[in-house]
Amino acid sequence: MRLNCLPCYIKQAMNEINMSNLDPDRAECAMRSVLELLSREHYDRTPTDIAWMIHLTVQEQGGSPDPFLADKDSSTDSAKEMVPFLKARIETSKDPLYEAILISAAGNVIDYGAKNLFDLEETLSRSEQRGFAIDHYDRFLEREKACRDVYYIVDNSGEIVLDTLLIDQLLSRREDRKVIVVAKRAPVLNDVTVKDVKRTGLHTMDRVELIESQNDGWVRKDEVGKWLKEGLVISKGQGNFEGLEGLSGIFFLLIIKCEVIGDILNAELGDMIFKEG
Image (tube, rainbow, N blue to C red; front, side):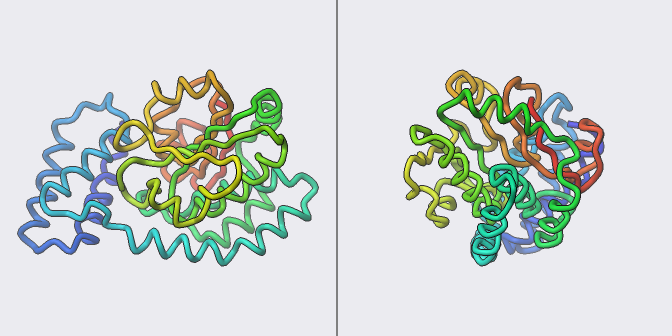
């Protein structure tokens, strides 16, 4: 956590309060509680720890446990409409796996928790032209060839539809491969829970196992560390990067959405990142 994270936390709280339709008195109490939380928490906490605590604080004041549900469903439905076009783009590319990774990364723009929102169609177009600002695809291929199973930590609703295209490519590369999709236990922002993933039908694909993380909020390092001993781990999104940075062997796939992460990765806002931890 850094000082520059504070405006994003306040925006998250305001979004959750507004989406929960709290009356003015409740809304004021919720925001005061969030500001008190931010004033007392130590900066050695991860940004995802603080984001989860803010979500719980708004809930305690009467906020909805899943305030972005309608937006999650809408973004999923919109992303599904793009699947035929994106499948064709993958199938006609010189490297279908790499193309699917690009498309999956572009889907990370669908994020109601970040300070900046980008346009999905524009990002998909730009991904073809600019590619990744950090590109560890060669390292990924070495690791992917050596691993049978893949743990895939999903991020946002809507984005999960594009992840399905990448998962399909990963499965096609080995007949004995299994992809374990990891979703959140409980709603937070527009991140996908197991229930949200099931709306996409991803869990019905052959050799796909759907599990929920052991803890509420974002997945933790100790849990992912076990998976790294068993197979390849792909982590989607900036939030998961914030909580898992420093783990060796994991592959992060995200779009830079704030200056803090841009500074850490020496990248610009909007850059797409495919990085080995």
